[in-house]
Every structure is written in structure tokens, then in C-alpha cells.
Amino acid sequence: MSVTPLMDRAGAAIRVQGLEKSFGQVSVLRGVDIDVARGSIFALLGSNGAGKTTLVKILSTLLKADAGRAEVNGFDVGRQAAGVRESISLTGQFAAVDEILTGRENLVMVARLRHLKNAGTIADDLLRRFSLTEAGARRVAAYSGGMRRRLDIAMSLAGNPPVIFLDEPTTGLDPEGRLEVWRAVRELASGGTTVLLTTQHLDEAEHLADRIAILHEGRILVNGTLDELRKLLPQATVEYVEKRPTLEDVFLALVTGEKR
Image 1 (tube, rainbow, N blue to C red):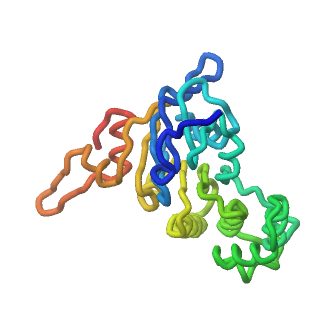
Image 2 (cartoon, rainbow, N blue to C red):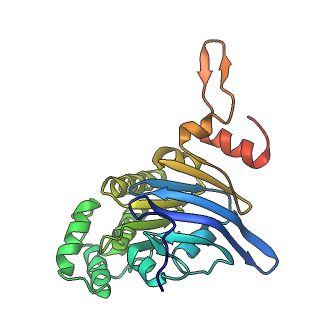
Image 3 (cartoon, rainbow, N blue to C red):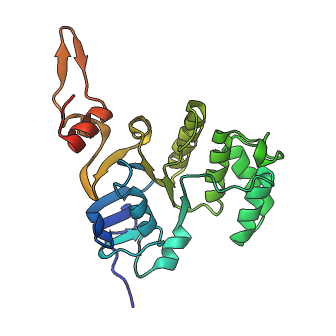
């Protein structure tokens, strides 16, 4: 049975329409709609329990939605799960690396599990791409948090998936580690990879994202560029100094109803 795409594959890499999900009596997603352009970084911003991880699990075929429709890379999430899985990579909140192995061995292992040819060449290319060549021969147990996270993301890219989901990728990292991951994410997008990033860190979305959606209690409150979101609050001036609303100002005003 053929499936009519939600939109042409040259358009959005991810498209979600009316997505709903409940667990028992608790409604987690309440009609979510988003589009993510190809080769862009899309940040899904929200507090704990807002529904960010649930949405990512549905888009990566780990959960089934109760209602609505979603496509990833032109494949229907509900009816073409195999096509979705071949198109994506998912990196969870904590680095899924083997600390006993070296960085290179981790990458070779993943490439072989995905039945890719020239696993060693792929591993070496990813080490270079994520500035881990010098550390490639060291056991991952000796890596810093930022290095482990970069390796985790590198492992996700074996096979060059066009879409990658990063679920709170800087959880538990120190400021230096966060900056390392930010640099890696920017490089992904510059190489044409579509990135859907979930985060609780307002500055992370502000620095990385082409577009930002604020998810609150299962609903998308706003969805736009940083400049578009800033315009939702009035600009304030104090004598000769103009204060532009930060993303934090926008988030708190929308979620709590308070203007700072």
C-alpha cells in the first residue's frame, strides 16, 4: 500500500501534525504540530515532563502515538517504521559508549553492527570529524565528559543518517564539555544533517537553533526563530540602554504568565 507523504521530501525532514499521546489518565502530548527544515537545527525547549522525550520516542518509532501523524525523511512513522529507522540516529540523555574499548574500537563496532563496509575507514573519518583522532587509541574510561559525548554523537553518525535526534545532549556536562558538544552539533548541520535537539537549557537553544519551539504541558506554545520569539515581548529601555528580551524572558512569560 502506497503512503502519501505529508509533504515533498525536498521540503521538511520532519513533519508532525496533531500528535497526541497519553499514559493512563495523563495526557503527555496534546496535539503537537511542528515542521523541521532539512539541514537545520530545531530546538524543542521545555521543562521536565513537558513531553520532549515522548515526542522524540514517537518520531524514532520507539513509541506509538495515540492520534495524529508524523513523517521523518518522507516516511510515515506509524506505517513505514523501517524506512524511518534507516533514516535516523538517536542519542539519548547519557552517552552510550563502552568504556572498556578505545574510542576507535567503539566506532568500528557500531559500523560493523550496521553492516557497513570499511569500518576502520569510517571510524577514522569520524574521529577526525569530531577532533578525537589523538584520543582514538585511548580507552573511553579516560575520556572527559565532553569527549564521551562527542564520541557518542560520532557513533550515531556511522552510516551518515540524514536525521539525528539529540535528547538533552549536554546533560551533566561542565561548561567546557557543553561547548564541545555545541561545536559538534553546528558541524552536523553545516554538513547537511537535520538535527532535532531537546533541551532544558535556554542558552543552548539560543546559541544553536535555527528555529525554537517551546513545549509546555504537551502543547507547542510558540514556534519560530529567536528574533521572532523576542518580538513576543515588548522591548524595554532604561535611559540610553536598550534591553532586548532574552529567550529566557520569552520562555518564562509564556509558561508562567509573568513578564520579567
